[in-house]
Image (cartoon, rainbow, N blue to C red; front, side, top):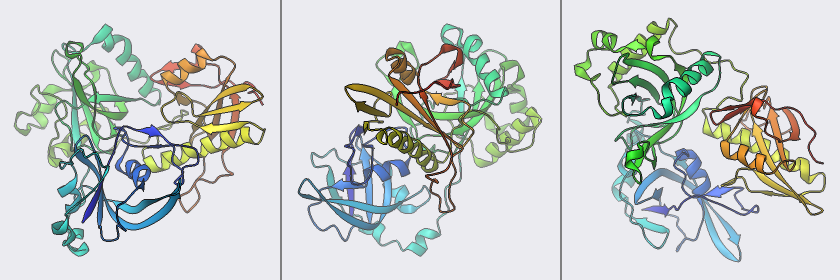
Length: 431
């Protein structure tokens, strides 16, 4: 037997949540591990639930996450018995994962549904271990300036992005995957191929940092429709004239005409992907793979679990700072352009926490965070926990790092729009 939990859109939870969560539900930019961690409880189960081997999380009529149950814990919540499961998230290549993920899940009124998984239950762990773990994929993202170049984006925006990368900066964003809706996972490789008019060719490379998710269509002529996207951290971008020419791709990696114009999101086979990686490195005149970037910026931690621990450590430090000074502090980080609210003697402060394993000279702030701080001058506080240190057990050293608290008054002279890279100016924060 297996149990499925039906997810709805993400929402915040009370501060006293027994599992220490700040949100539950479905977020398209969350990883399988993040979704499992926040949604494995708390559920009302109609029976002891001791014989289910697998659990799934579904959203929009489709199984999104598959886990193997390893334990169960009960909690008393408002006088009612609730259950939370422990389990291991299954990966692509595991036959149980591959059989269940993406399968149809009815949109029942009851969010908990049991279903027969006896055929999968019968597969022994030894047999499952024989299956090959999924190898990282490579996706080709495409851009045709004849079809999309709003407000001269290539000249006014893309050229600045190229300069940012060249200076060792961080550049994150999203890109359409065309018709592709699955088959790409965080950590997969991506290349940006410029199509249409010359100069055509590969002009960028990066790493996927999210699952594929739908959002409003990039083509203004298709208002009301959705397109498919992934989040990407770009490691290299070059101007079109400096790209790996289309002619070289065709000559060096013939690959049956795959370089002809087509929608983005296509995944070449492993051999072609390896040849492309080598040719790109040769074109750039560097060794493979791309060297790690050394940057004074906040950086984007690719490991979502590690990233979350850093963020939580910064949040906890900032909230403790104000609680120690007599403020009443509430964690409201989900769905708001600030992370916490502090109140004392009729005054309200909006707290924003940033954590980084770097020196923290520059941190990333979103446009909504900037907007809110500008609309509430003098009442916003920024707490930065930098030089975060991890203990050997993989947890953050709660006493380590460098913690700074300052007034959060955005200054356009230190904001670089992307979202924004903020170089904070130390200003005393309200105590």
